[in-house]
Image 1 (spheres, rainbow, N blue to C red):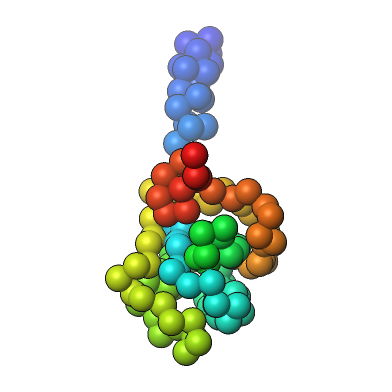
Image 2 (image 1 turned 120 degrees about the vertical axis):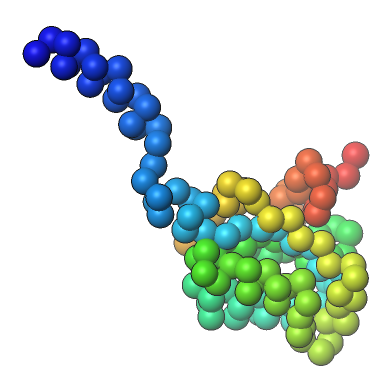
Length: 139
């Protein structure tokens, strides 16, 4: 009995650290950040609509550099489609987005920096930059 309990106590930490297939964040979500080369106000409602129609959440913001930046986290089955729309459009007509200048970084761990209960447009004064591109901090 003591040997059985000792074995169980030895295995318990490894069992707690492992997750069954389908329950890891990377099994359930697709997450990325983006930077669109336009500061058109019409991009924020477009991104909100895209998030609502795809069951995603995240945020958008007009950066000091005149780009619309943000993050998305979507259900795994919809994430690549949403990322494709952000990378390739079609965008609102007045946004004038040059597809060659769109930047996207997919997160391997499916974790985003800022979490909100729904997609949110952040004010321009909030610091949201990252250590690397896209939307790298200046200075």
